[in-house]
Image 1: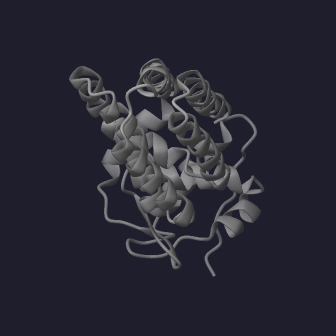
Image 2 (image 1 turned 180 degrees about the vertical axis):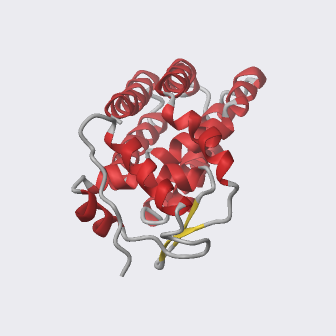
Image 3 (image 1 turned 60 degrees about the vertical axis):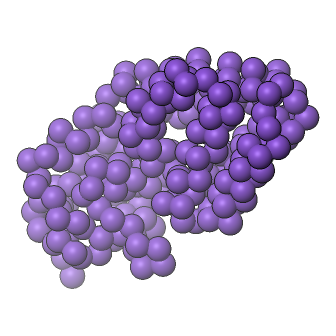
Length: 229
């Protein structure tokens, strides 16, 4: 059994401390390339932090290619030049960049929900329903859940039938995916399902004000979460 040093979590952001801990143990060879790291439960117990903090940290390293989660098996170390890790993690450590993206989404997506309610087609509603169904049936599969979550949001933009709005969202697609990974915790998944369901119901009723209000609540929740990270 490998004895792993426990670090002091008093002064720095907890999630960032867990990321540093995981990265150091990978760099030091505690977990080699292709090897399985400890479970969220074990890491939480070892480090005396919440499982949510551990999950956030693991998701960050998955997003930048350091780790890979295999459904039903666990999380494994992937091959990656370690000198690139710091650079790739920059977007996650920079709260200002994350906040910029969330503010951008709030401006574009909230108003789009308000306007699209009067023009959305039956086909678009059908697509939104399909994506939501896929999210619900794959709540424990991060890859499929995130893929359909992003398709749900994109479908609303697509239904606007406005080339510039769709292109503006395409410009931040990669950043949105990294953000979705970051918020893909058990709490985040359940919250997303509730908000997406309410947005869809509002759009079905052509209630743009309600759809906009729920989308605003959805993104505001993410803004509050990122402040606590």
